[in-house]
Each structure stands twice: as structure tokens, then as C-alpha cells.
Image 1 (spheres, rainbow, N blue to C red):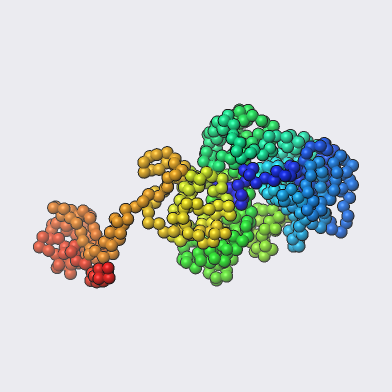
Image 2: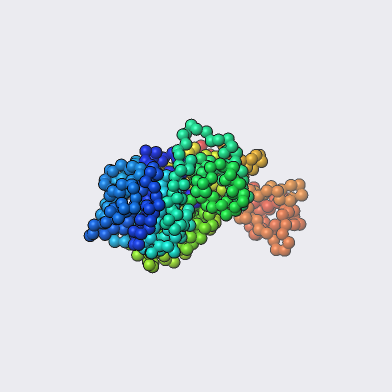
Length: 609
């Protein structure tokens, strides 16, 4: 399941800023004045919500938007000032020369990036709103050209908020609405005159009222939730019973709020009657926002320490293998591939790279395979990398074949399906935070199994290896980069959702997928292999029972039908020197012979110990 890669547990309700009212953010550009006026004509002035209008404004001219909107609303309209508190029943406008962010219930003005083609004020505000208000963030995208707002909409949906897009057929310029719809994450695509009612209905749902930490879930809710998870499994094949239930419950309540359903039993009946809603809920549980070079400091460590080490220790004739489980729409896999290519160029060596990028969501994988991205990635990808690895067309970027051919995108459920193996690097970022502790442990054990000795593992900034310090050693704690340890144990590799094969027991979060090995037997076998003379154990009829050591130095198979009998009539053929040393009974003396080099080693070892 690839889920985004978030830096905090999305939609848990634990981080939301309850000091601020719900905020409705409206992004508009060319042709946006009329829909803005229409929206506020239908919105009452006492909803208890705050409204933030973000437009693409020219710094050379004074905006008249405030005066024009004030004629259509009873709420006070004002341009945002730095550190201005967010208050309910107010309409705020962005200034022309600044980006706006919201933090702890107050607006902050930010200097935009002074690089042509990278100023996306709508995305910037939507993202900050998602981080600050979680499910109480509501974003609306209206008429405009380009793709601004699409990436911010993803962030709002990941945080559990609501997203509405103007019907493109109604918009004067449909570039922004079409781009937002193409994300597949819009909750509603509506004409403007219907938006106000949907917003008010959503804001009035119990879902937006924060539940106290010590307030238990209603027993009826918990029981019905199990039936819902069973229904999802029967329809989609995916089992969410070991995912964090607090997150699952918030996602379900969000869907209930969108449908104006307050009773969990009523929503369960609605799911039973509407398979389409089951698939939408399934997708809701998987929402994961991926982006290029998310947490830039982490990728700097990868570029400076990890990837050069992998290339230096690797064989140029063997492929470097990387796995990105929970890849979402593929941006992280592409980011890693770019870093490997750049490192190869610096080290002046060819890079034979295979990146396996997997996700449980087929639609996300399909988008990843298309490798087409909004022009807003200019805020995440450097100008040099855009030129080097992408082709610009209209308002989007297309990944060039050099990188695309290195990546295999596939649908996979890491919980139930076999993993990849012989890997140099696994990037499993912000997936574990969605899982219960028991499943987290089994996934970590599984990832250790997939890695080569001393292979690297990358986790999300809010994740850790927990009690599995026996499997991984830290490389960079802050960046959450670890290295696989060599473990003196026997790996019993199972799918994480299965029981323990040792005793046939069902799932047990406390059990490890590793079983202790007989250390004494391991040491004795290693010593015998290294120092004992080569020999053959036979029974009373000269049938071979066991080979010890390099017997091929003294014995060879005869022509004709193969035999494992050393009787004089049917012995394995030896070379003349070995035959001359055969015992009277016909058994090759080689069974008692040992190479002088090994004997000397054995004596030296005994003398030193």
C-alpha cells in the first residue's frame, strides 16, 4: 500500500488546530471573478467558517477584487496581513506580492520563489491549510489556466479534508479544473451555484468535531466497522484489519460526512447497496501524497553517502536493485532513479539500475506508469533536472525514457504478496505509520529479508525500527536511513498476514518471523567445512551415505549409468594416482586423505587456540 509519505499520521485528528475555525480556500485565476461572486451570493454570512481567496495577481496593478466581492456578501472582506488571526465569518484575499500560509490559526506572508514558472500560490496555501487544519480544510478550485491547485488538493485530501472542483463545462477557462479532476481525488465536481450548500452540509457534520482522546468509540460503531472491513475485503481483496484503526475510522467518518450520513449502520447499508462506494472508500483508505524529493535533507544524505557507497561496492555487470513499496503515483521512485544517474555521472561509471515501484492501488500505479506531471513540480525539481530528465508540453512535464525505462511499476500488496529480493536499497517511507505495531514488525522483518547484506533501508521521518535493532543498524538517525545487519539466524519468511509456520498458530503481533538457529551446530559445521579432511561415509554394502569436504578432488563419476556405490565391481572411477592409493577393500583412500594445506591450517588453528 503506498501511503503517502506524510511526515505525520494523516487524518488522525491528533494534530489539527482546534483554535481556528474551518477554512474554505478558493483558488481562482483567469475567468475566476464571476464564479467567486456567484459562490458568495449563495453563502450565508454566519456559517462560522473563514474563507480565503487565492488568485493569480499581477504585482503591477492594484486588485479591485475586495470591492467587487463585498457587494455579494455580508461578511467582511479584507486583504491578509502578516500574523493576522483567522476569524470566522470573514473573507480574506491574498496580496499580489506574497504567498500566504496558515499556521496555528494565523496567516503568514511568505516571499515567493523568484524563479520563472515556479510560483504556485494556490498550491502553497492549500498545502499549509492541510497541515494546519487536517479535515477542517476545504479547498475549491475555480476557473483558471494551468495546473495550480492540483498538488495542494492532494495534500488536503491526504489530511482528510474536502475538495470541490468547478464543472469544467461551466468554467470560462478549464485548465485548472481539468487538472484537479485528473488527480482522481475531487470529492465533488459541481456548478458554482451548488457549492455553498455542499460546503455548509459538510461543515455541519459530526466528523469535524474533534473527539477527545479519552472518549471511547461507540460499541455499535466498532462492531459495524468490522463488517465494513469485511465488505471491503470481499469486494477488493484487501484486508485493512491490521491498519491503524483510528485512521481507518476517521476516513470512514469523512465518507459519511460527504454523504450526509450520521449513523454508521446506515452507511454500512449504503455500502452494501453501492459497490461503487466500496471502491471509493477503498481508495480513501489508501490516499497517499507523494512528491519529488520529499524532505530534501533526506535526499541529500542519500546522494552524498548512500548511493555512492552502493555504486562503489556494486559490480558494474550486475544490476543495482531498488524497491519502493507504497509508491503512490511514482514521484519518489523517479527521484531515486535521478539520484543514481547523477551519482553514476559523477563517479564516471555506468549505472545498471532496476527500480521496482509497487502500490496496492491500481489507479495510482496506472498514473505512475504514465509518468506525466503537473508543471507545479517546478517547485520540487530543480531547473537543471527538469531540463535533463523531463520534456515540457503545455502545462505538464513528461519523464524521458532514460529514467522511465529503469522503473517497473506494478500492483502489489506488501502485506499479502511475495516481496522482491537481492535488493541494495528499500525505500518504505510513511507506510508503517498506517499499520498496527504487530504488522509493522513483520514488515520490517520482511524488508530485512529482501536486502542484500549491508543493504540500505529508508523510512519516513516519523517512523522508526522500534525493537528491531537486531536487524538494522542506523546510518543517519535524522534521515531515518538504516543498514541491514548480518543475523546469525534462520529466516522463516512468510507473508506478514499469515500465521507462524512453526506451530500453525494464527496471526500474533508479538511473534517474530525469525527462528533461532542451533548456534553450536552452525559453528561445528563451519569448522568441519573449513578444516576437516575430505571423506565419504558408506554403509556395509558400500553405498554412499554422506560426502564431507571436497571429495571431487579424489573421486569422479564413471561413464554410463550414475552410481553411488563404492564396491570393487561398481566403484566410482578415480584418476590413476588416486586409484593407486585405494585400500585392499576397494574403498578409495581419499576418504582418509586430506590436503596438506588444510591440515596445516588446522594445526595452526589448534595451536593458536
